[in-house]
Every structure is written in structure tokens, then in C-alpha cells.
Image (cartoon, rainbow, N blue to C red):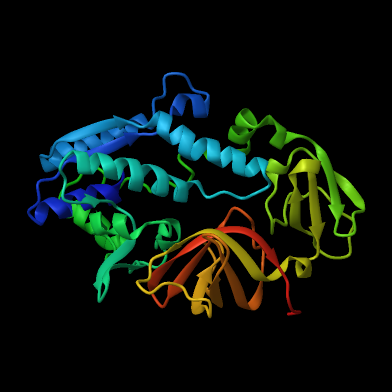
Length: 356
């Protein structure tokens, strides 16, 4: 129970279904340290709101201190990824390493039959067992951030909001007189106050803020920058380079040289993508001949046609039907068959095999 309306309605729906419900809120980080404001605990208002919802529902409520786990598994990984010139997704790491690993084990230890969360994703029974599908509310679908969920975890997880739209959830919260019915949704990464992620990275990995050169694809120096932490592949604004005949984009980052490489949009085109740590949710294994899928290469992008093949170790190789722009290492490539989530992997590299 995060203190928001989604997890509050989740708890209410599970209780209404007749289950004995225990509400759990995770204290994940020191909000005072993150924001620079002394005396501010980990989103203290959110913990208070979750407790009020639990009181309204007459269910027990516990706050678990996961700060050390969250720092090691999410915040440090976030900073290290930027140091390597990648573009991380901390919400995936939090689901993968904290909520669906550590919290799930705690739920089992408590003797729970299931762990229910307020994620926007649908769990459905398929011919070979439970499957994950995109949420009914396409604007809020969180399947991209849950690609690393394993079959064993899926057996234990429940997602009551998967077939509901946000307006229905708000209406249920009002009907049930939940005190967070009108609470606004959170927009920022939870441990990055006001979206200023560079401050967090600079504090943990000062080398990511090392000044360096901005060069074009031929290696010509066009300007200077104040740290690769301020850039991501595909970025157009805020480059600090002008006087060119066409708009420039970040096409690559070279962290060892503290160098940002820029070029025209055409230089971003990629149709071959390498993945590491593929999580495959389909019952049939991925065969050498590959499988036709659609793939999302960023959370806000539409899924595009591709073919996925197994690669060495636990990796995979994607062949995109048409070149895409802004494929960034550190992001996830998430695979679908229609509405069904097939899994995905972490982008480690990309290339262009044929012209657009």
C-alpha cells in the first residue's frame, strides 16, 4: 500500500472478495536526504495515508523498513547505469528486486496465499498457466515495467486493477469513502525530488558529472558539456550546440572519454538490437528460428513489429521490421503477442543492418 488511490482500491477489492487482508507499506528511502529537507521521512504523508486507508478498511497495516535493500538494488544501480552511459529504468528494478523478490518472500513468510498490488496489468489464466496482459486502461498500462516478472512470481501475484480504468477506480474509492479518493497520482521517480535525477547521480557517482567534449559522428569537436549524466540517446533539447544546418540528437555516449556524440536524426536509426538477461514468459521455449513479436523499446513508445531470436547465454537478438530511432542502452525491449506480455530483456547495443 503506497498511500495512493490504486493500492487503496486494490486492498478494498481483495477484502470485498472475502480474503483476510494485511496491508504492507514499504519505507524505501530517506526522503529528507533525497530532498535536502531535514525532518522529512520517506514520503511520510504517503505512509500516513496508507494507514488511514487500512483503518477505514479495518485491516492490519505494517510499515517495513526496506531502505538498505532499496538503496543497494535500485538507487545504486540507477547511478551506476548513468555512469556507464546508459538510460536506466528504476521502476523495473524496484518491481524486480524489491517488490516481487524481497516483499514477495516476506508475504510467503507471513503465510499469505497471494500478494496483490495496484499495478495496471491483467493476470489471466491461459492454457499453460497464468499469463500477463496489457491493462484495459491503455494510458496507464504498466506491462512495460513488469517484463521481468517470472513464472514462479506470477503464480503468487494478483493484479485486481488490470480490467479497470482510472475513472472506475476513483469512483470505487469514493463509493467506499476511502480517504485518498481524490489524491493526485505521483509523477516523478520516487527518490528523485522534482525530477532532478542528475543531483542524485552526481552525489553517488561524481565521475558522471565530469565535463567533456561534444563531438559529431566524425569526431569533430562541436562544444563542451558538464557531464554525461545530463544526456541520453535520442535527446534533442539542451545539447548546447548550435549553428548547424539541421537539428542534432545524441546518438551515443562514451563514458570512458566523457564524450557525447551527436548527429542528425538519421544517425539514430537502428534495426538490430542486442538484449541481455532475457525473461521469457511463454510456455514454449524461444527456438533458434525465432518468433514474430511486437516490441516496445521505450515505455512511452508504441510497440513495433520485430522477430526475436535466442542469443548466447541468456541473451536475445531483435530484428526490427523497420528502423527505429533513439534505441538506448539501459532501456528495456519488452515483447508482446497481441495484448499478451511475453517478457523482455535489457538493451545492451544496437546497429543498423539496412537502410531505411
